[in-house]
Image 1 (cartoon, rainbow, N blue to C red):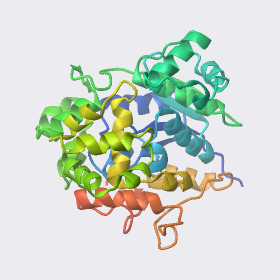
Image 2 (image 1 turned 135 degrees about the horizontal axis):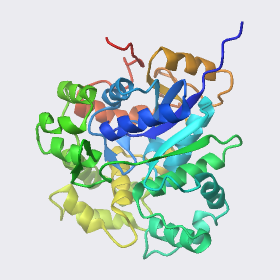
Image 3 (image 1 turned 60 degrees about the horizontal axis):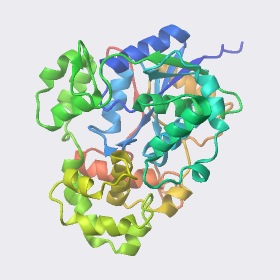
Image 4 (image 1 turned 180 degrees about the vertical axis):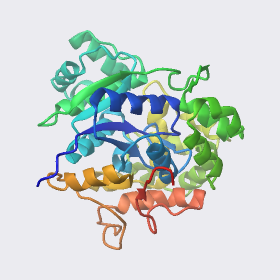
Length: 391
C-alpha cells in the first residue's frame, strides 16, 4: 500500500536568533495550512545583510527544531548573502524543489495580492536595463519603478523581501501557494520592545554588548534561552571581525580586491583609501558610504573581502540541498522529495565535494572562518541534527 503524501509549508528564515515573533509565525503557518511538515530554509553562518551570524548554524537549527520546524535545510552562502532578489530566488528554488505546497512569510501588509504582485514584477524591465542611476540605491530605484508601473511602494524591509518572494514563486512552473502572515511586534532594527516581542537586531545588540541573557527571557522561547546560555563560542558581530578584515585589505593588491565579488565601479580604490583611516568597522563603513550604496550592500562587499570570495567562485557556485536537522516527519518528507527533486543533496562534506571544483567548496571554505571563531566544527564531523522531542 502506497504511503500518503505529506504536504509541506516552507518558511525562509535566518533565526538570528529565533525569538517569540518567529515562534508565532511557525505556529500560524501550521494552523493556516494544516501542513504535515514545516520546512525551513535557513541562512547558514552568514546572513543576508552581510553579517556573520550571532551563533553558528547548528545552534540556530536546534532553536528552529525546538520551536516547531520539522526540517531545516541550509540556504547556501552563494544565495544567503545576496540582495533581496537573489536571496529570495535561491531560497524559493530550494523549497520548490523539495516539493513544498505553501510559502509562509511575514509582512507588514498581509492583505496585498502577492501572487498578482509577483506576476507583475516578473514583467518589469530587467534590473540592468533600468537601474542605472548611480546617485540612488537599488531599493530606491525599485520603489520608484513599482510606484510608476504598479502603484505600489514597498517601504519596509520585510515588504521588499515579501515582494521578492512572490516574484520568485511566480517564476516557478508550479508556484507554491503564497501565505502572507501579519508581522507582529518590533520592526527590524527597532530598539523598542513590544510586550513579549523584540526585534532580532535588538536582541543581538544586547548580547554582543555583554548583556545578560536573563534580561531577554521575555522575548525568547525557553529553548532559545537555553541554547544561547549553553553556546560555547562568543556572540559574534563585525566588531569582532574588523581586525581580520583590515588584515585582508592591507595584504591584498588593488587587482586582488577588484576580483572580489560585488567590488565594482572602482570601489577597491575607496576601500584601500579609507581602511587605515578607520579604527572601527562602523567608522570604516561610514567612510565608504555614498548615496549609491546602502549599508547592507557595503557589508556584503566587506564580507566577501573578509572571506576572499571572488567573482569567479560565485559565478561557478550552484544551489544544493544540505539538511541541517529534522525530526522523524521531516526525515520522511526529505525521503519523499527524492522522487522529484532536481537539486543535488549534500548530506556530508567529503574530499570530492569540497575540492576546488566541488559543489560544497565555497560553503566549506567560508565556514572555516566561523569554525575558527566559534571553536566548533561546521561541516566536517557534523551530521544533521535528529530531533526527538523531550530528549
